[in-house]
Image (cartoon, rainbow, N blue to C red):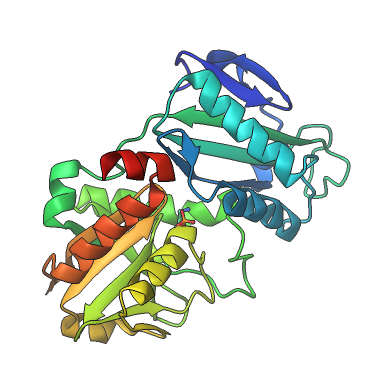
Amino acid sequence: FDQREGVIWFDGAFVPWADAKVHVLTHALHYASAVFEGERAYGGRIFKMREHNQRLIESARLLDFEIPYSVEEIDRACEETLARQGFVDAYVRPIAWRGSEMMGVAAQNNTIHLAIAVWQWPSYFDPAQRLKGIRLDMAQWRRPDPKTAPSKAKATGLYMICTMSKHAAERRGYADALMLDWRGQVAECTGANIFFVKDGKLHTPTPDCFLDGITRRTVIDLARKRGVDVVERAILPEELADFEQCFICGTAAEVTPVSEIAEHRFVVGDLTQALMNDYQAVVQPAEAAVAAA
Ligand code: PMP
């Protein structure tokens, strides 16, 4: 991945992809002092870019550091990187981290870096599997209590349990894993939020200890526009047997139907399909939507 063509925006300048390197004594590598975003461009426009870059700044503040760029500057840098890479449909990854001046837990004076990479990532899950619904395992790791970790931050350290859970799921032949939270309630997947359908209503866990995804909020708006009731509440794993449909959503995953969670089965029903289509329509820039009509 580090030997690709193109450029990466790195602390305000474009550097060749293969040269965008950090030192091994980077604080972030040792102590997880890094935050990032995942954004997607459709037809040359980055969907909800401002919200993502605002969240990047907030994530850094939660980790007690200030990114030395304004949200406007980060927006412009994302757009320029996308344009320099020459893609119209692409994934955009800004990452901010503490540098290497001081070693040790404290690092108040370390330089804060920001880099932005753009690549093509058409489908996070296998496209054929996506249409039939993906299969989820139950994760062995639980989302921590917000008193234990900065759960509102999109911080690299919070992904340690996600990578371990996703690896275990893939080893067992599943596409991803459903994580419970520290109380034993349904939380989210390793890189996406989760929704269920029952009697025409959407049910989704209250995001009180995991990321309140920008896609999640978009899906809630789209469902309400259709007149569908959306219930945000505590969901227990015992309830999985009662739901008819299930899907996960995130910037990379978009809206992806789920056919199985452990022993539970779901259909890819009308509401899931409608929301998949609504999401594809809303992410397209207005001109592209007009041209397609
Ligand atoms: N939860 C986790 C753990 C994620 O990594 C993501 C992807 N950023 C999401 C939820 C969905 O967030 P968003 O819709 O903002 O991409």
